[in-house]
Image (tube, rainbow, N blue to C red; front, side, top):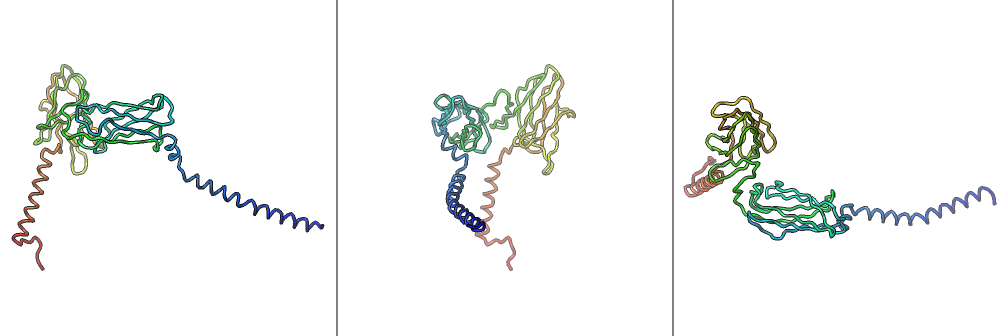
Amino acid sequence: MSTHKEYALIAILATAAVVGIMPAFAVSQANTTYSSQISPSTISQQMLPITVSTDKNAYDRQSTIIVTGHVQNSIAGQAVTMKVSDPNGNIVEVDQLTLDSSGNFQDKINTSSPLWSAGGTYTIYAQAGSQQGLSAKTQFTLPGGGQNSCAPQQLAATVGSELYCIDYTIQGGTASGATLDMASKTLSVKIQAPNDGQISLNIPRSVLDAKKGASDSSFAVLIDGEQAEQFTDSPATDARNVTIPFQAESEKIEIIGTQIVPEFGPIAALVLAIAIISIIAVSAKTGLRFMPKY
């Protein structure tokens, strides 16, 4: 056999071998593609599902919520992060729990906390590890009505029958109470100051704010009726932190803004709705037109 014929025979055999092997690789590639469609979180969720539940579906404001849950195929001592959000989406509770040897976890929550002021549906989220796929949630409800007391580190500010809790710290004295005045848009704080000191208040913008158009403006601050020049005002997204130095024997600090909690918001909306309905009714009955007829 000549050299050229030998080369030709080798080429034919090599081509046949490649053609025969390709279907095997095609099947393998198809299997790989199919497997890749299952995300890691899906696999993890199948291997390590998590559940969370409460002992009731509804509670009052003097209850203890018992939260229980389970993580399968877990390791004793593994951490589970639990957070609770109110009907407005605000986080009101965050806890880190530890699994027992059976993969169970439990927590108790007191509904009398002043953070739980909104009525409606609350949501509990539980997550094992850092993967979002290993999470579960459950819901329960609380009645409306708001809180009737504030935490020790909060200042209770009242307007009529409503209570607003303001985080604060004070040095050189004590704060004995606060009131909100709708007419003057003022937060007044009573203090007892045996020494020079300062008070810092984290005032929610929904309670008191100072605006000039759409921009923030400065609060006006009075100490015992005298205007204070030395104070700091640090605006944040939802609150304004105000730090006010005071001298010994000071008794009253007033913070004056431009916007304050709406005292008659629902009533004003109702009055407006009645007025609009009345106008429509009168115009329909009398044929009154607000636009010229062409």
